[in-house]
Amino acid sequence: MPLLLGLLLYLIAAIALVVGAAAYLLSGVEPAVTMVPAQQGARKVTPRVQAWLDREAEGRAYAEKEKAAASDEKELAEARRMKAISAAEHAAFARARDEEKAAERESATRTKDNAKREAERRSRELRDAEGPEPPSVAEEQSLQYFPDLHGRSQ
Image (cartoon, rainbow, N blue to C red):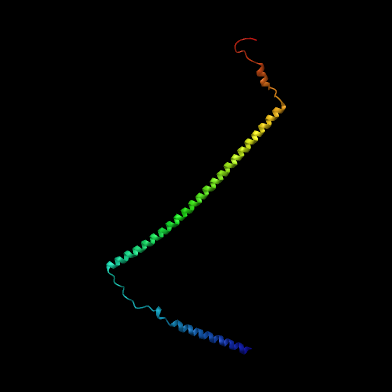
């Protein structure tokens, strides 16, 4: 068993050594793609061509700005449209709520009027059932005293 364990440790050490050597060798090799080419002089461009290139760049920048502005305007219009829709929905909801309140008020008024009429009817029925009402004290006094407005005596 100790012999087998020793062989296993030896094998692991050998593999580590081989992998490390391969990594060292590969890091020293640089691919040709990463090598920097010799400096080339900048291309000489005539002023007329340079002005044309500048105008082209400005045109592209202007087109990009216009495209972004159009996109922003489209988003703003969409937001306004959604806001208008929500305002219309809100107005419809408020109108329906107002109609419901008006109907409730009318119903309450009708109920109140009906109760008032019913109370008057009951009162009238009670008065009719009791017979004619005796005159009040004030009515009796007013019937007994008539001032002589023309100076005639009785």
